[in-house]
Amino acid sequence: MLNKLIGRKKSEQIKVDPVLQEFSKENIPEHIAIIMDGNGRWAKKRGLPRVAGHREGMNVIREIVRSSNELGVKVLTLYAFSTENWKRPKTEVDFLMRLPERFLGAELPSLIEENVVVRMTGEREKLPEYTKRAVDKAVDGTKQNNGLILNFALNYGSRSEIIDGIKSIYHEIDKGKINIKDVSEAILSEHLMTSDLDDPDLLIRTSGEIRLSNFMLWQLAYSEFWFTDVLWPDFSEEHLKEAISAYQNRQRRYGGV
Ligand code: FPP
Image 1 (cartoon, rainbow, N blue to C red):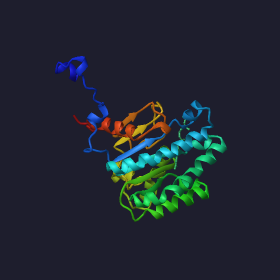
Image 2: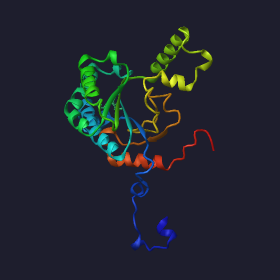
Image 3: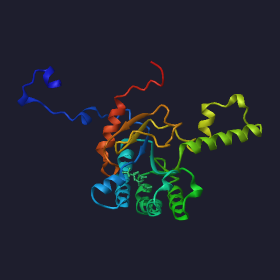
């Protein structure tokens, strides 16, 4: 189009990568949430067991954390295990539950060095002891940092989170701490597991699925969504930049004009 407008001959035409053209270090989304989907299909395409896709998916996290940190993203939430994922075969669940130990066991020193803060959103109690131990060690080991917050959504389900939030508000009403007239969006946000985080600005889902799968239903009310057919183990820094560039070209109106 540009070539046509300025009358360039075919032989003189410049191919501009739309991503590099549009990507800007200004206006980086502060909170990016990712539904890391497609590990199973990635493995199947290669004739490998599903868990090989999860292992490769885990390796991708390193690159995405590093580039998010470099780009100045403040919070990166990764949907690593949903409350529905317990329905998978036991061997797969066991493998997934070992991943925090594997990942954080290898990466904790560099996460500390890179000023990353590790945290978790989800129902902690139901996790195996070894998963809790690995997460706790990383949370504790990075609590003095103040850079990128790497938030693992682990055993997380949004509907049950909202129900728990409502129950907790009810108890406070019952004890006279909150007046029912004062219950507001802000009050419910304060009673969710993400009470200390701003809502995601950008949601990315890989693998071509266009749904939320019970992920941050309340928090994503005004987020920009970006879907890609790329399977999570193939996701790279370039795809992240493509998503950010799409975000930068959106107009967030929050219902206004
Ligand atoms: C969905 O793909 C992916 C998951 C349920 C697990 C995601 C976990 C990781 C990428 C690694 C987590 C790492 C740490 C450190 C916690 P799928 O299995 O549903 O893929 P499919 O739709 O192709 O079958």
